[in-house]
Length: 212
Image 1 (cartoon, rainbow, N blue to C red):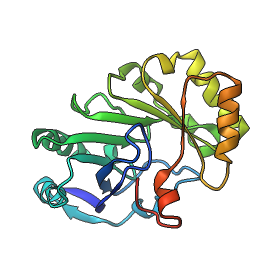
Image 2: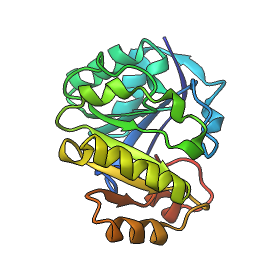
Image 3: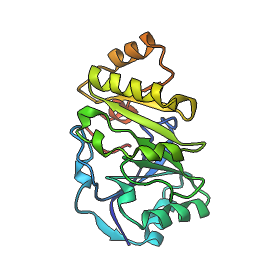
Image 4: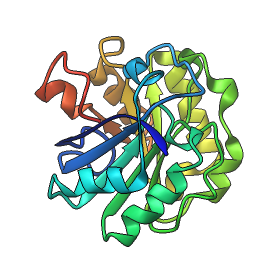
């Protein structure tokens, strides 16, 4: 059984899959407490659901792209069998993870979107750097950036580890805190080979939490 906060159909708001219709399976619970977190409602509560119940609900939306997210989905051991089952059902499967827990057990074929926590998140000390050695084709890295200090830290991480040579690297401004235009300007000035990302769901539906 898994603790599930919600399952819903929306537009993918982030990653290289932005703009695509997607079914989101948001699991309950997270081991991190990022200062800017916009899904704190998923920290607690939810309902217990079997993998079969989850897959049946996903089927009902008639959409072939599914993202398992949270909270922190990998905090629940049954997330791995859920991901495997979704692949068996023929879905294109994304996993959004905070980057503090091991990713090696995630089945091949799942596209892992791994956060790297910047200092202003308050959780940069929890980054599991060895995950970066386990990245594979189809994976992505995401840095959520709150200010210039975060940007410079992220820039150094990308350059020192040659991250953009291995997978797509996404730089996203904390919504309402950092002007994304300023972030784009910094990236251009530094000729940094990353993607500046807007949270499309927050543009489409301002004030609505769901959509990523």
